[in-house]
Image (cartoon, rainbow, N blue to C red; front, top):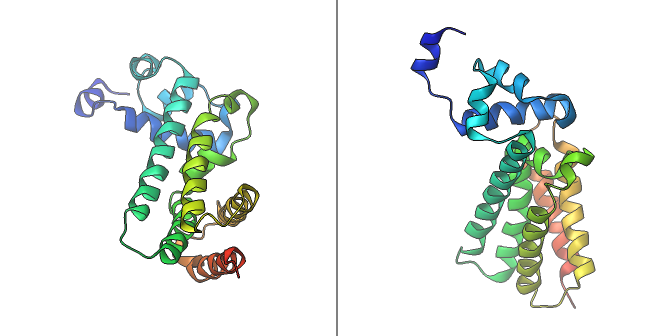
Length: 191
């Protein structure tokens, strides 16, 4: 690395997080070190420690940031002036869209299975699931059970997980996603 490069572009948290996300997904959490991240960036590993105290802190920052993005997407849908049925459809479709539009984020949030990082990924999924569950419950006029809401969540998660890393975008599977959401909605309608 030339000293000139370091002066031209200051190392930011975002640069570190983007590179770490890529390496974690390619190699797995256990097989990535702070030195590898710094090498990929072309900076000294000490520069990364200025922003993050260790690899776990860096990973947790990624998870926290990603769940904030999902929370904001959900909140944006919930604030739309739609009837409950349309809003529920948008919430379900919005989850799929988030997962397939931000596949690397989704994988960090839900699909990394490394034991060491599980402890860093417990609170945020529970908070977003709770918000999702409350929204579905309210939009279904309080006519669904927690088990049914969990089944809906798992169904959406299954579709997103299936298409993650497939090279297909949300737009590629939009028709299927809409059909899937409509199928779920029919099962939630009470007679």
